[in-house]
Image 1 (tube, protein in one colour):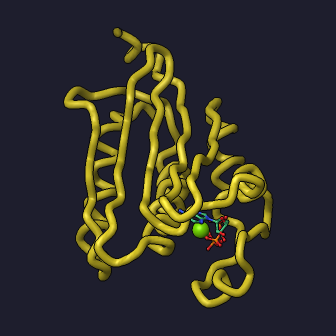
Image 2: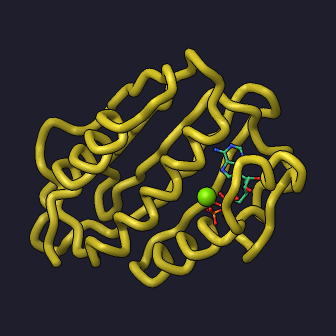
Length: 156
Ligand code: ATP
Ligand code: MG
């Protein structure tokens, strides 16, 4: 359904900000004006929930999670960055494979199945977007994805 992504994303971030137990700062860099996309809101909620949960799971106390949305003509690019352990370069594409986890011991302790990002990739691609990861080991990770802008919301 046609959705203002800015409002939609703020509401998801609000929910995490209200319930988080760690001392982690949230930094929002979102457009002031609405940007319309055509999405299955339940599925996009699932994607974003997993990315934010991962960011919190791998963040140190006192860290920051940054939310970024940029409107690039026919697409928007959404990024969620943390200051956690990071992801080694040779794992950056593998984390989108089913059941893949970087550090088995640590992952076991933190819980989860290793399916979150594989599902995210399927759902984002089904929406006509792409998803990828950037990271510097020990400095943090950024997960980014794109979504096509709704035809009637394309005014740039
Ligand atoms: P699930 O999402 O099914 O509960 P999970 O979080 O382990 O389990 P994914 O969300 O698919 O699975 O993530 C896959 C792996 O990618 C994680 O186990 C972790 O090793 C790595 N990873 C994902 N996000 C981050 C992040 N923000 N920082 C560091 N490592 C990450
Ligand atoms: Mg996960």
